[in-house]
Image (cartoon, rainbow over all chains, first blue to last red):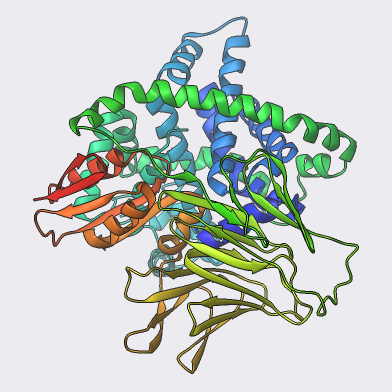
Length: 184
Length: 396
């Protein structure tokens, strides 16, 4: 989360710079989709909402000069679009009713959901910049929950190599995965 | 969004990265008390199966945005310029409605939270866009009062106030750039305590003035160099021009020279040193016959009483967040924080007790009333405040 990158980005974005928008798009599309998915329970709907929010942002680019205003606009737009989607459903299941209640009445659900989407993006980016082989092994450990032995046999390497890769990945990552109990 | 969401997010991020200090943990506890959903998020961050599941879902959405991949949305937006132009005209209008809706939403939200604030006798609102402009002929213009549009037409440039309040100098294009024979006209913009302002100079360079700051500049720059004089705290985003270096003079003996860059200068009379912090690009700081070259993330500290000039690595967030509308104090002594608060809220600070503890206020919006900041520091249990008129009393 390089703040300076952020300031530059907002300034360039306001001028209508396409590269800046592309960066903002990459930065927010997954989080906005995830956020909207937690509000609508529908993956393709969530991606439509994320795209729609980002294209609205691009149409209004001259009105934004800080990353905070960009972020706030995106999440507010995505929340409203998710609400509209839930309201437009002709048949609402109890899940939909519950989501509608949360999205409309519970500010802290929106807040917690937004922060979670941002944090997952952070963790995702951290893992993405690992060297390819470490990344592959680490994803199996962290995201698929495979054991050392399972990974060793799947990749046809020694268990010690898996353990080495894991230790190396944990050294590089700036997340306290062991302290948090997320990786043993 | 919730006005303190950036602050809360910063706490969560720090929890993931290096862990929270005791005082930060207490702040987060208070937020979790107020917003129970935050507690379940906190618990989730130590729950392996749930995080694994969430990461897998997240990856589904993230896989479409790999670098190098051309996304259909990007293509559609960039290749459909007709779609883009009428949308821009509508933008101001729609945005206005949206931001109105957002403020109503936040206001409703805060009606329950603000009961906390009543424990002080009164509250003090944040500073805002305020500044006085002195023109070349000596006339003064109170910028927050003047209406949008043309403010003044002077030699070499026109001064225009934008919709959002920013001031823009538009250089006259019909004037020959070599105007060395004509007499130069200077303008000065000055912010009071509790005021800040954003201005675009005739060369396109942008400057943000923090509270109690000033900037003096010609209405048209020379062909050889661009020189401005500053005091207080000013953030510059300088337009690159290899043939015309941009120089900022502080008091008499310091010159900061720039070639296309973003940096923050800080020179208050009540501070011991004055600082130049570089955000991007390259600057040279000259003072007391010495000079140093800064790289991004470095700060030049100049002390007029000892004539010392030294370089320090600094946390950029802490130095320049004010410009984006945030307070960011990372483990700072109370005196440092209160000096900033005094300038921005235009208040006096009285110390009944001396407080040795250090405090964190990460990414708090600068438009919050002062009570919110004071309460947050009180949560640590190391300090108490009272507000009497425009005076903040500090107690154990």
